[in-house]
Amino acid sequence: MPMNSQSDLKSPVNSKIRGLASDNEAGVDPEIMKAILAANQGHAHAYSEDEWTRLAMEQFHRNFGADCQVFFTFGGTGSNVFALACLCRSFEAIFCSSKAHLYHSECGAVENFIGSKLVPIETADGHLRPQDIESYLYWQEEVHASIPRVISITQSTELGTVYRPKEILALVEYAHQQGMRVHMDGTRLVNAAASLNCSLGALTTELGVDAISFGGTKNGLLMGEAVIFPNSDPSLSRNFSAIWKQSMQMPSKARFIAAQFLALLKDDHWLQNASHENKMAKYLAEQLSTIPEVEIVYPVETNAVFAKIPPNWIEALVNVSHFYVWDSSTGLVRWMTNFDTQPEDIDLFIRKLYSLSMASVGSENAIALEHKMSREQAKDISETRPWLSRICDSQSTEELKTNYDSWANTYDADVREDWSFMPANIARTLSKLLPKKDATILDAGAGTGLVGEALAQQGYTNLTAADLSEKMLAIAKERQVYQSLHQCNLEDSQIFSNSVTFDAIIAAGVFAYAHAGVAVLNNLFGILKEEGIFLLTIREDYRRKMQIDLDKLPWTLVSEEGFPIYDEAKLMYLLALKKRKLNN
Image (tube, rainbow, N blue to C red; front, side):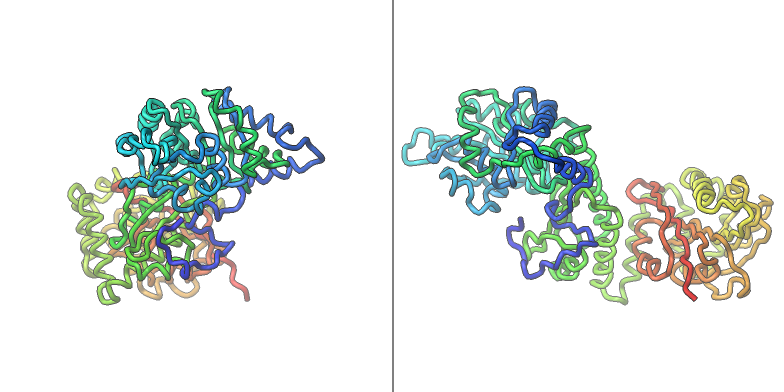
C-alpha cells in the first residue's frame, strides 16, 4: 500500500476500465471461477477432508516437494500471521525490510497476535542481506532485548524487484547458522518465478525456506492463500494445526479454496497469468520511456512499475486509470498490471500521459517537442540510413516531394532490409478481411508500387495508386499492377471526384512525422466505402499522437500487429480498421 498517498485523489473504480492500482482490484480469473462453480455441486467433507483438497495437495507437492505441509487461509495478512506464529514466540524478533507489507501495511497484526517484535531494516532496494542482520545478533545474549528468531523477506519485493536464488540461499544459510528461521511472504511469488524462469520450489523449499505465505488472491483467486512448510524440521510442525485453528484461519468449507488452487497450479496456469502480467508491465515501461518527464525509479522485473511524474499530473491521470500514489510530494507512483491487463489499457493511459507532456511545454512548443523527440529517437538510425533523415527533416510538402523524387531510383534497395516484409504482410492481412479480388483498392502513398505488387500477387486486380512523387509513380507504373495512377497531395480535400469511393485503402509509410496527419486521415476516410477496410502502418510514438483523431472516426479496429523496425526499441504497427455503417 502507499506510504505517503493522496487518498482524496482515489477515483471511483470503473468496472469497464482495467486499472493499474493493484492486482487486488482485478476480478476472478475465468478458469478459477469455473473451478469454484464446479466445487459447488452437492456436499463434501469439511475442514480439508474433501476431494478437492486432496487433489490440490498433489499439485502443491509437485511444485513445492512431496513432504511439504499446506494450510489454507483466508487472506494475506492472516497467512503471514499464521506462518510466523508457527516459527516464533512472543519474546522473539522478526527482521524484515522497512518497505515490507508485513511492517507497514498489516496494522501491527503480527505484534498484536503473536507479540513478537517486528524490526524494520532500511535498504535501498527492499532486499535483505546477511550483513543487514548481523548488527542485531548481540540481542541473542541480552535478556532485555527480543531474541532474533525470523528473517522475513518478500518475493517479489514491494518494489517489484526479485530475489535471485543465490540471495535467498545466502540468507537461509546465514539464518540457520544463527539458529534463526526464514519466512517468505510470497504474495507475488509466481511473478518472481516467471521473471526468473524457474520453478516455485526452486525459489523456496529447495533453498531451505522454513515457511512460505503463498499468494492466491493477487493471482486471480476470488479469495484464499496458502501457508507452506517444507517439513524439514518435525519439531516445528507438531502444533501447526492448533495454531491454524487458534489464529482463526482454518476454513470449514475448504474445498472452495482448494478448488481455486487446484486450477491455479494444475498445468502451471499460474505461469500463464504471471508471465502475462510481467509482459504488460514491461510494455508499460517501454511506452513510458518515450515521455521525458517520467522517470522509472526501480528495475521493472515483475508486474510493478514505480515511476516519478510531475505531482500536478496525478489528479488527471488517476481519473483515467486508478493507481496508488506512493509519495505525493515527489510524484512517486506505482502502476501495477493484472492477469487481465490488455495493451489497449496501457495505450489509453499512455495517451493521457503523452497529452500532459505536450501540454506541459505549452501549445507553442508542442510541435517542436514532437519533432525533437522524433529526431532524437531516429538519431542512431539515420547514421546508417541517411535517406531516412532527409525524408524526416523535410520542412514543406514541396521539399518532401523533391526528396522523394531524388530517392526514387534507389528506394527499393534502400528500404529492402527494414521494409521488405511489410508489403506481403499487408497483402495477406487484406486477403483475410476482403476476399473479393475485384474490390476497388486505393494504394495511398504508393511510392514505387511495392505494396501494389504484393496485392497483385494475392490476386487483387482493381488497384489505384496515388502518390506525391511523379518519379516514384513512374517506377510503380512499370510494375503493371495498377489500373490507374494519380500524382497528388493527399492533403487536398478533393483527391478524387465526389463519386469515387473504395472498398479498401492502404496507407503504408504515410502516417509519420513530416508526412501525413489529421487532414490526410479525414480525406481518406471520406473516400472509403461504408464497411470498407483501411490498412495503415504507423510507428508507436506517432500512433499516440494520432490516436485521439483515429478514435473520433466511426470505425472498428479489426486487427493489429506490431513489428520491430529500424530499431527494436520502437514498433511499427499494422492496423486494420473497418468503417462502420452509418445510420441513415
